[in-house]
Length: 483
Image 1 (cartoon, rainbow, N blue to C red):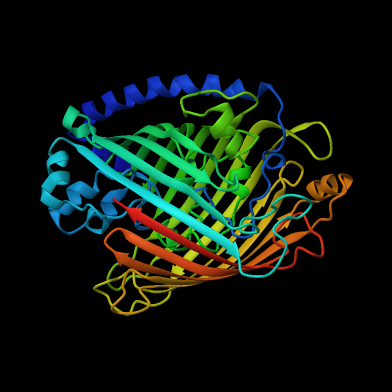
Image 2: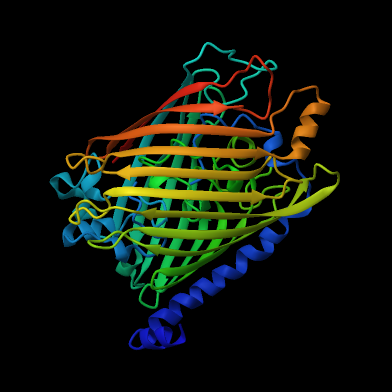
């Protein structure tokens, strides 16, 4: 790595040192302030809003071929498209190419903005979930899982503005400002509009080093639990809520953070420090504690330390896609422990995906994939402490439908013993685990427009349980429109 750094400093040392000087000054600001936020105690994040499993999408958090801070590997061969695509916000869950959006570059408007270093992209989405079985719409007097009562949600909508700092003399820098909105008929997601991301992403040393600093949705920067890595086609099936429980800032809920990535070939290491997400949950944070997204500190929240080590090879003619990543996280927030007192805690997450076939080298992403996930979090402080998932999916299952996707996902979420005991003390029946079997199809309707529909068979769909609840078969439909 030292040889790479020495090599790339030639001819650009002063520019890099100026950038590093600015970054170092900013880095000194958040650490002390975030370290003070864990001074007060709070409840576990799941004590406030536990009606998550069954038909829930992970709001944690599209073109899956975009690595955070390293888009040079995925640029279009068309230079006019590539320079516009380079202005997409940088994340492991990216946004689609300008060629696959509703507005595109009609009339050259995006190209004209790109002349000034400005990028614009956004997403509007809606999800409808309902139980196809004749089963109770409430358990113990309330809705206990997504879809028990017919529900409409919108949780990933955003408008992102970016600015290429190369136009101001800082090569490799990209500023991002993003506003988000969400809504839910049953209160699963918060209501309102807020600033969810505002950050600098600076690449250095020929893109081998990347730093992000500002307000970040770290669910878009770590793990990537979506099937195929894509928001457009990957929300049905996964139910991995453990990263959110451990304090990762999720979709629509940015938090002050600093992420550093070192990339060498296909290997990378991404480490970060973030003000932990509010312990009372997403709805409380977005509607009570920080409704507009500007608040730096939140009472009771500590510091989240994250590290992800991974190997990623993108699809190309003759090369199959492989992505393996392992994350560790420690949250210093003062959780109310199930065993009594206050406690910090941690978690470990491991995910892997591999492409097994490539029927058309001219469209290298097409093919059959399989993947698996394993997650663990401290059962003394979280409601869901274990997660297992197996998935198989086909990108472009038909030659005439290269952007469609068919997927089959099976997962199991383990309910922590401490949480079950807490529910039983209140007179509720409980489930030890939640099992879901999902079959879905994503149809690429037109440029920028995707519809994903599927069925979810949920065995014990909630940690709350009684015999009348039954095992539902849910239908879920997601419409996504990128512009």
